[in-house]
Image 1 (cartoon, rainbow, N blue to C red):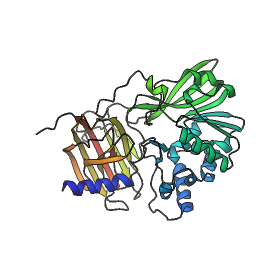
Image 2: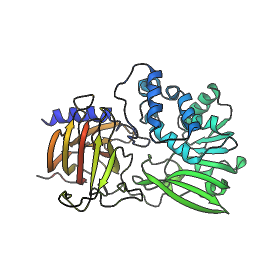
Image 3: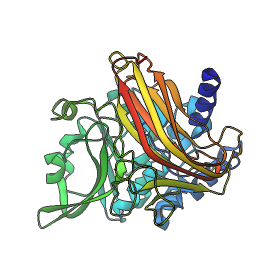
Image 4: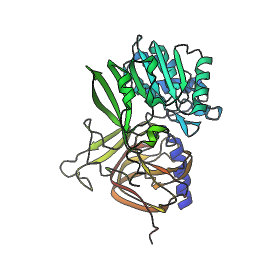
Length: 417
């Protein structure tokens, strides 16, 4: 039974994009049908991006940019799915939706000079290229920086200048910049980037700890910064000097936060959870009470294969943590499989090692049909090589409704009886 569950969850997780590690994102929806041609997949990807991005210039750039040219040949069949893909050196290419979303938040103009921190594959710079006057992009990992620079030059992005170096030092000889976009996660805004942002400029940057971050929009006016939190997010912890100087070097609490969904953001979403799709935090009134606290999280989907989920990452060390305890209250209504028989509501946890390689998957469910609030619990051994875990709740391509409350996911140092 355990092996069968693991196989089912593995298929669900692979198809529901939990392998995305630059952002660990499940943004957007998978198409109900996956055509074989890259062009057809590309067109479906653009339609998915339209669900959350309105700027016609950004959408045109996404449509015109051939993402498969920025991923390794082994990943090209996945190039137009909305997921991050490994590009080597423990790095990934960001999912197309988050690239488009961050680009839109910059409000790019044809006269802008933009600084990008974290070149990676060069995909973000390629998206920016037709939208602005000049793009200056920096990558700290030398092999990635060199290959991205070569790729961008070969593909004809003449207004993109790339170099290898510490991005958090900026590029002072070309400053000031009208816009700055950061695709790695510092604890605080590096002072050189503040200094090199033109007065009146905008910066999009994920800020926070190693496993809990907020994607922020920073504006500079009269030399002063104002910060607006856009949404919770997760970017892989950075490398280099900035990571060495991080004040909080803890590996996290080996557990998730706000599993009862009581804390909400200004927009009404569940705090600490990110890349939410087709969700709603419900505050019951009358007879329909939450099994724990005053709120619960509900997902609904009518299109087979379309994503409806919430994610959260946390640190775990398989050499120290031996067991993971999962529990949650779950309720379903007319829940049925999506385009695949394993596309059903579930709670899923996937483990990754130091190299961001998937090393195991466990979970609760999958669930189907209609059922009242029921508490589910299970314990699993943690893979010894695990260094990072991602928990997801949702329908994962299934249809109908699924609600979750009082979700607990905790790594423990000892194996219980």
